[in-house]
Structure formats: C-alpha cells, structure tokens
Length: 612
Picture 1: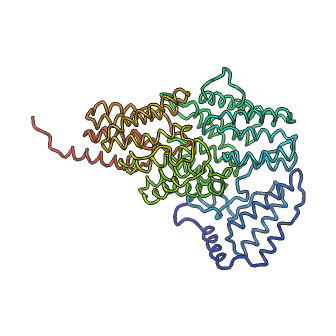
Picture 2: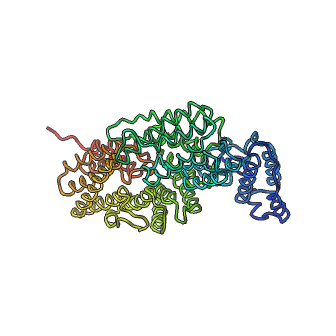
Picture 3: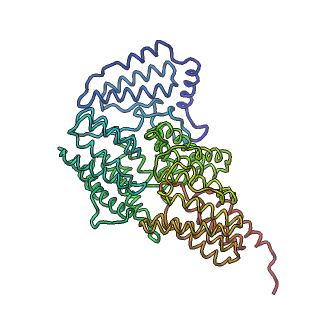
C-alpha cells in the first residue's frame, strides 16, 4: 500500500490510537480484563484447554501492547475473542484490525500492532501422539523452527520432553534445532547433540507412520555420510542431500501435511545452495520448484510461518525476487515481534533495490533482537540486521544514519558466538568506509574489533576487514600495505581451501585479487591490473550471494568498471556497470557510474573526427 492509500481501516486505527492516548483504559475495563485472566476455558476436544489458553494469552498480549482501541473496538474485539475461543479449531484467527493481509494492502512501513495476527508467531497445527501439554510446547517449538529462531525453539521442545517422557517428537524437535541448514556447517558439538536426540526419539518408538517419517528424516541428516567426507563443508552438503531425500519421502507419505512440505522445500533450497561452486550454471530450477511447492499450500494455510519464510529464501536471487515481494510485505504482520521474521523481507528488498524498506524493517528487527537475548548475550540477529541496515543507508546516501549504525555495531559488548554475528560485525564496518570511498580510514580499520568474538574462528569475516584495508591502502597510495593485506587474504584463502570450503574460498580469493589488481594499476601496470580485476569480477559473479549478507562489501565488477573509466574506455565501463546492476540492483555507485560512462560517450561523440 503506497503513501496516501492506507484506506479507511488505517485511518480508523490511527484515530482510535489518538483517542486511546488521551483516555487510556478505564479502571473498570482494566479490572474486568484482569478478572478474565482467571477464566477456566471449557474443553473442546484433544488439547482444547491448552489451545484456548494460548489464544487468550496471545490475544491479551496483542491488546496490551497494541493498546490502541476505543471502547467500541474493545467491545467488538472481546466478542470476537469469545467467538474464537468457544469455536475451537474451526474458528478463523482474528486480527486486531479486522482485516486480512490482502485487504490491508502491501505497505512496507506497517507498524507492529496496526495489523496483527491473533497468534503472534503465525499458526501451526502439528498433531503428535503426546500429552496435550507436550503438544502445545511442540507447536510452539515448530513455529520457532520455521522462523529459524533455533534458540527459542529448543526450550519449547525441552519443555515438551519434560511434560511427557514418552513423547518421541519432543526429541525430534531438539534434533531439528541442532543444525542450521542455510547458515553454516554443523559443529562437532551440535552434531553430537543432534545424534543423541535422534537416538532418544528412536528409542521411544513413535506410534504413527507420520511421526516415524519425521524422525527418519532428521536422522538422515545426523547419520554419517557414505562414503564419509572428512572436510566439513562437503560433509554438510552430503548431509543436506540425505535430509532432502528423506524429507521428500515424508512429503510423499503425507502430502496434505504443510509442515512436511515446508521442511522439504527448505531442504531443497539448502541443498541447492550447498552445491554452489564456481563455473556451475545456476538457473534456479530447484529454487523455482521449491517456491512452487510452497505456494500451493497458502490458500489452506495463510498464516503458516514456514511458507512465508522459505518462499523468501527460494526467491532470494536476482531472477526470482520480484515474485516474493507480496509475501515479503505480509511476513511482519504474521510475527510482529520475531527478529528474523522482521528481517527476512529485506532479502527481497535488497534484491530489488528498495532501500527505505530494507532499512526500516531491519531497524525493527534489530530492536526485536535486543528484546530476545540468547543466554544473556545479544542475539546473532542483531548484528545481522545492522549489516543490512548499513547497506541500505549507504545506498540511500544517508550517511548520518549509517554513522549511527556503525556506532551501534561498535558498541556491542557481548554477542552470540556464531558466523552470522562475525560476518555482520565485520561487513558493516568495512562497508561504511568503502562505500563512501574513505580510503585512508578503510586502510586503518583494525581487524578483530570489537573484541567480542574469537575472531580466529571466523576467517571469512576477518577477510572482509583485510579487503577494506588493502583496497583502501591501494587507493590511498600505500602499495606496501596493500601488498601485505593481499598476502593476508591469500593465507585465509589457503585455510578455507584446506577446510574444503569452496564457496567462501572462491569469494575471498576474488577479494584478494581485486586488491592486487588495484595495486598493480597504481604501480603503473595498467593492463595486468585490468586483466586481474576482470578475472576477480568473473569469479565473484560466478557465485550468488550467501543468505548471511545483503550483498558484496564492494562488488568487484564495480571496481573493474571504475578502472575502465580511468583508462578512457567508457563503452566497456558502461557494460560493466550494467552487468553489476543486474546482480545487485539499484546500487548507488553503479548507477552513478552508468551516468558517468554515458556522459563520457556523449562527450567523445561530440568531438570532431580527426582528418586523414
């Protein structure tokens, strides 16, 4: 929904908020609402009491936090709640605005609370052969799983295991929280934990073929690949293939099970990403198929978090991104306080160059992440959101907000130890100086700051800082430092290659080559510099961006185009800038480069042709 098109609903909500800010709740309403908390809801079949309790808590939280209702709105909402509560699972979930996502439009800056699902994290119905209490916990855990909020999912599954010691699916859930299919290979600790939970689930002998299928699927991931693969990234890819095949079998067994379909789609997307390698053609066939599968379930499951989340991942590429814009703009209304749900739409926004939306949604994600720490430290979702914010603000030319974002990054004093955290912290700092062409300051960046992580565990993130230092030094004329930074990047490439990490070794090699190419050019070896920069750009472009990043810290193709302009080759520079924009839409410097190249071509055409 564009500016000025909010409609009558939005106007009424805002007028209600204005009246609410003046009047507040009356004491009578407050007392009545407090008394309702003690109501014991009648049972409506298996698990009805716990589900009604969950509905009441979710509805009550929305009312307290939204706090924007007039007396008439309160009365209507109360009647609606009683209808839903008494109607069991047949009832359609209410929305505080009284509308569906489609009716409310697709406005990117919808505030949490204006249009909100009654279930604060989406709706999941996941029947299991366990007690009602355990099932309620498992449904909570599955919901968090679909949002990739793994640290929040694990306690829910653990509570299910405590509530019902015979519940095999509680241990299935704990195993599912032990790996991150799209983010990174699984650590030894998490592999061991996952295997233990799989074994516990198998010992309890789930009574239904569906539950057995779920357990077999996660067991396929934690079983050692045959043949055994020593290098962790390749081991991860093999495990993902096994998981994908098992999830496909489960999906075929229970084709009406939306969760089975969603996890199968995620496995397909994750496996396709893990197979990415230089020179391998990407036509996104597997991502298209996964997206088409997810889309088939939306009509019957309009509030299922996995459908929203995984569809965005399926279409997170330059070719398919426009297909996901509508669903991306609805995700936050499904889960208005889930950090990753608030962040995920920006994967589509950065692909399409919608910078204001990318910044605004990650501002909300960062705030939500601070409300959801992990074991007393800042969640990885916080630096992840800050990196996306930094990227967006710099593309908007909003250096003031970019500066404030940098200060927030550097103020992090304790953070979840994870590759996602390390990458976000390093990338945000490197972007700030490189995008603004502040070369001397880029060359002065200190690796390993802020000192909140064991940075030696995250060489890929460290390489971003050395890239900024090396490119900054070369552009500032300090060729000796540029050479030293390129040598450090080469060491990291060798380490990643030894670990079998083809993707990040290739992306990091492109950075080192770009630093060396500019060093060669500044030294006066123009042709060698251009040739190496073109090679580095081709290598970087042969691999799609990783989900952890909004885009390359400074695309090598742009650097190649800038060298061509300096060499007086505007036609080639124009082609290079346009190629860069096909991969990274609406980038500020690439757009300016197109204008400069076109101006140079016009100026050249205006010159008189020399005579014979």
